[in-house]
Image 1 (tube, rainbow, N blue to C red):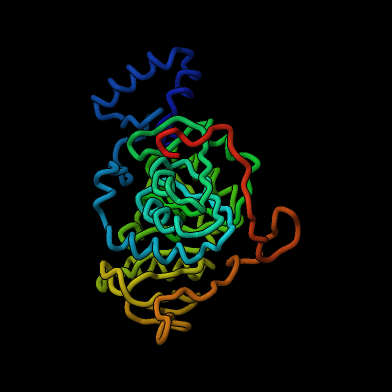
Image 2: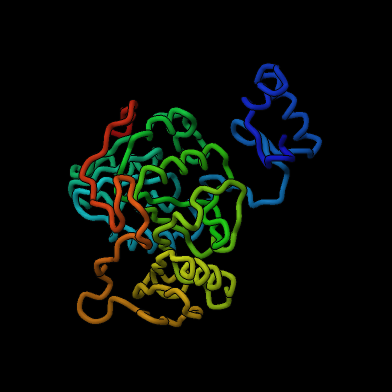
Length: 324
């Protein structure tokens, strides 16, 4: 089953072989010791082949300047009174710290770190999903998290991941996290992906946001010699994704925003059509951004930019005591 599907849950294995999950877990541990598969939380995957997920301490120390610039730019997309969903991740945690200043905002999240960043924001309402805590990234996952998102509708979803390619879109290394991220995508009219240049061109096992569902990518400038990153950005733009590049050269964390344009052969340092923004008085201030990248049919009929939603239903579970 693992060879056929790439990954399988312990529950599914137990059902197929008609035994208990305790027995399956023991057998999976033995197979891992022989190098035949890798254990993951709640399941097993084929060994090697795709980039593995780093732990939270490693993620929190990686590309900190880039994440700060990305979060600052992404926060400018959010207007007062909106309802948004924010997924788990160190980049989305940085975004949450900046969303604390947006009045009348409602944030639905499965991330304890996002909730903690907003815990003392008097003008922001935080709604948490249910689910089982995944300690490696402080996120709520599983059927409880997914069910609490059913029937939810918000204006935007902000998601991060482990890898991003024009061919597959955003992906992650964990099956349970991917499943919740897909539920977050279904709840939003627009999907904004936050990914630093180091994730461009990297493919991981579980797809979360296909390229055709991405409204916008907020990233930082690939390094000068990183032709692969620039090619991925141009390929994403050619498929209709709005690309917003924060900062100047990678790691600088400063400088004007610029955008890749469809059909424009751009490399690092070339603005292309519509190139730079934010020059002169008020430099760095975000100008109003266009709506959806495509006139996709809306769920309530018609086409065009969906209305901004002002509230979100409360899922079954409330914010934990320590995060109020």
